[in-house]
Image (cartoon, rainbow, N blue to C red; front, side, top):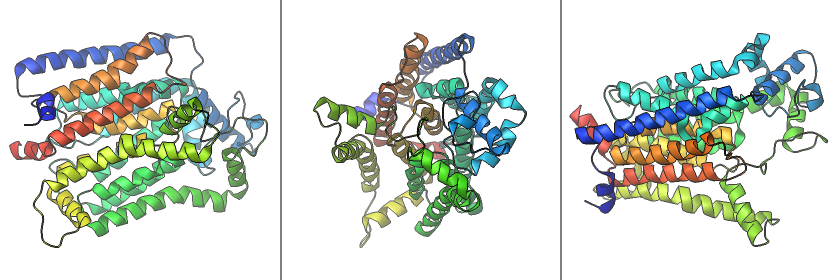
Amino acid sequence: MSDVARWLGPSVDMTERRNTWLAWLIGLTALLVLGNLVSDATLPLNYGWDVRVNCAAVDAYADGLDPYFVRNLKGTRFSYPYLPVTLDVFRPVCAGGVLVAHHMGVYLVLAVLCGLLLPGLGRMRTSPRDIALRLLCAFGAFIGFEWVWASGNFAILGGVLTAVALRLLLPPASGAWDRGFALRVGGAALLGLVTSFKLVFCPVIAALYFLPLPRARKLVLIAVAAFGFALPILISRVFYADLFASWLGVMTKQIPDQHAVELMETNPSLLLLARGLLDQVGLGDSKPAMFATYALAALALVLVPFVLSVLRAVGSEPVRAGESLLVRLDRWLIDHPRVAARVTVLAMFALYVSSPRLKEYAFFELAVYAAVLIADLPALALAAMLTVGFLAPGLVSITGHTVEGGFILLIVALACLWILLLDFRAEPMRLEAQDLRS
């Protein structure tokens, strides 16, 4: 057994002693998460700035005004960032001003819904412990929910829809992968629609290739997801032509004297980290150098480790004569469906964290992907995830320090990805073994 496998140790339910200390750690993490939420709720701050912007845009549109001009939005200095079609989609959500007045309570319910909707990967029956871990992850991982809760950002809706999409794409452990393709088509379409909310996250769609399905079906799902991503853009372009031009103006900073959504806006992403590093050597103004450094960082820190981990697992299987690497990958995924489901969500996590624009509230959606993966981790890997992904940023938050404008959350998310990859490299077939034991 390798040193990494020895470090990870046996699964959570192997010894009563490990169950005891892990239960204490989970309890401590839950107390910190709850303490953070209580602390945030009692601070005399003007929460909900993003939900006020979004609902003010819906109201302006209903009054016949162009919602992409900030002067038409009452009580805000920020611009509306979403596609024109969302103005009609969000109208029932904002009706009556209930969401603006009570968004914190509504968002708590939606976060619980996320945890309950998420699928399991490695157990025939979902245990209360697994559900509790997913709920804890939704509320506490990367302090993403805290940012969504405070700002009122509609990333909470993206999180709920992502949970539904994953539920449709990944059947329960007892489910058969050769049935229910229509549901997976619906899940792929929904995942594409979610990525259209924030266009920079569309590469997540490529992760569908790791599903344990024949290649033709996987390509169909990717095409459906791509169509789901493009559909809101097409509808906005055709049926909201004037507003679409204004939306483009906001995206490209063509509307003067108002806030504009831009790629280089302060956020804890690899792209901004690359720019910061180049600033130190006097090359911060060189966009080619910045994007090249960003690409190298994404490859070195995220994508290459993920690909090598998967290829290492595929390479452990016997080689059939005349098989290409891609055919071997397809066969391995189909032969190990539970592992393939985990690889799919790992790929989504990796592609999401590689995004060039990763605002603090976006870490809530990242926590949704992590919530699928966390429940099946062995003891020490789970402890490492709780310590790095929950306790460390939670302590920063509860002590009154801000993570905005820095790269703490990015470093935390990358560390959690590496923990997940180390666990996968050590025991890639653990989920299959759980299936056999069940």
